Image (tube, rainbow, N blue to C red; front, top):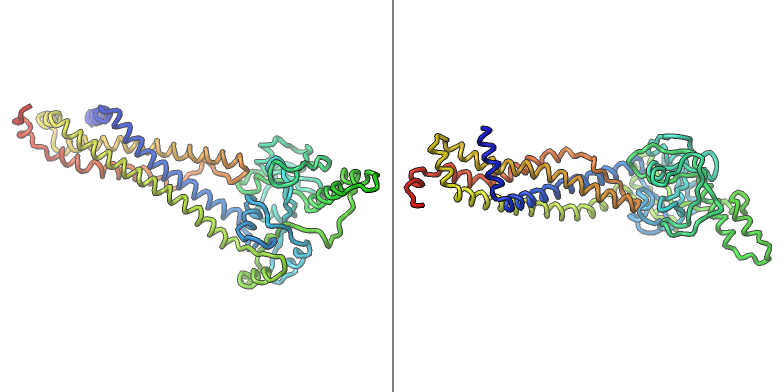
Length: 419
């Protein structure tokens, strides 16, 4: 058997260019399927993880999808702000079990600064790796990715910039102090900077004071902007938040609460279950195209392997006849051809899985640079176990006819044929 295996290996690489082409085609098809599995599963798992415990989002009038992307995944700009009194109304509503406010508007080198309450940490069952949560305004807790990428630690200060990108005006005079670092969770908290709602209000009230013209020439507005706590406080009735994350008290809320919210002036509800299903359907179009491309490559590889093996059997007829004369039964000759396909399947499986994970690593790196979704090459899908079986099945299917041809070789006719 060992001699047969070595002979099959030599036969496989007797035509290196053809074998290499078959290997590349089969590997690329398997890599495409592996890539689709890894990316789609991680996106679906990430969506479910980040939406855990959130039944409804309430924001300013606009697109429900935009509200979800900005308020849950922090991948889009919000539709606007809503009055703070709206939060009080939602908390007092009999169908609302929990309402968590979020205030957006500033960022630090692309990482968003989110004003909220400690309930936001409880929503995701976040754990501190060091320090504590904020106890007063202008204190911040950093997500694991933020701390790692920006090199910030406990006790260090930083200033945010206006806007959710990296090009906004800096609030240089309003500094935050890092008081806590979150443990890695793999979710959206890893790339956020969390602080108290009052911090966001103080920074922006000070920013508005700075932007007011100093008609008296006293410079009072600029001085007030240097210290948020000394800025003229905005009336509580005029304060705003960006959106609220709601949890239902009973299943009845899913029917009536969104309708009630949308009936309020300036308010828009977004149901995560519906919007995430739409999002996954949109993502699914791309994954289906890529999966189809993978199947095309696999079919092309199977056809190429079939042609190659059939041609090889015809070329090696004298060799195969000699094996038969030396006592090899027909099934061993057929097995020799099948072993070539098995070797090709094994090599393509290893190479395809490696290429699939490497592609996910490259995509994950690109998304991390954009402060977007987290994708890990270390993710393993149970469905990947089917990839070697798929490669084996495709190769054996391609080898079936050539192996049958080798099995039915007539040694007497080959010996009598003129050479």
